[in-house]
Amino acid sequence: MSSTIVQTLIEKTQNFSIEETLAFLANQYKDKVVFSTSFGQEDQVITALIATSDLPINIFTLDTGRLFQETYDVFHKTKKKYKTRIKVYFPEASAVENLLNEKGPNSFYESVDNRKECCFIRKVAPLTKALKGNSVWITGLRAEQSENRNDLHLFEYDSKFEIIKFNPLLKWTLKEVEDYLEKNNVPQNALHKQGFVSIGCAPCTRAISEGEDIRAGRWWWESSHKECGLHGK
Image (tube, rainbow, N blue to C red):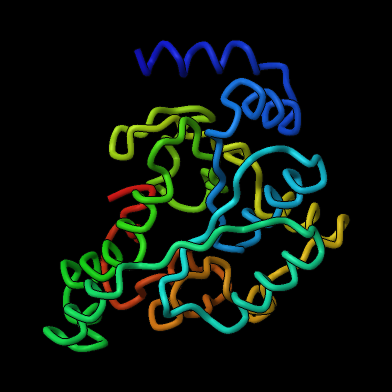
């Protein structure tokens, strides 16, 4: 059934612009379309598209409790500019307390399993709560962000969260993203000008050097798929 729905969406929207597709989904699924933002460059493009079109798409973000101040700054600027509601989901306090009491505040540096445990508590569990009861999840994923994202499709069914995923910027290049933001004066995270391309939690993100992979600054101390469990392994 899910594959049939995905194929139908592909066929119905194949000649639509991103704005037209967003409007179609908002009308088709009413209040069950959500967009998750981390206030990165790609997410800021989609936020601007939703807000300026005044679409009834619910925007939410995950506050892990360990974000950069610059991320909070762009969050604040975005709310003020577009006057849009962005719902915040936090990790369960008891889960964070247990993790820190048992393993300390920096256990994620010690092993991939520990890092994934922290990501699960701070990101995956809150995301599961945010997506519950919804039909379509809009993301800012781009194929060139990592090898792990090269096999993504514009529409796909996410069996982990049991929801249809729409990746409108999948084929966009970083330059296209940056050009859109500059042209439309969209608020951006100040860290992007300091070599931070992919921005997550402060202890787990560093700037990258010229020639490094886009995701090299995430969990730089480990060899992994560079994913936290939201969109991959």
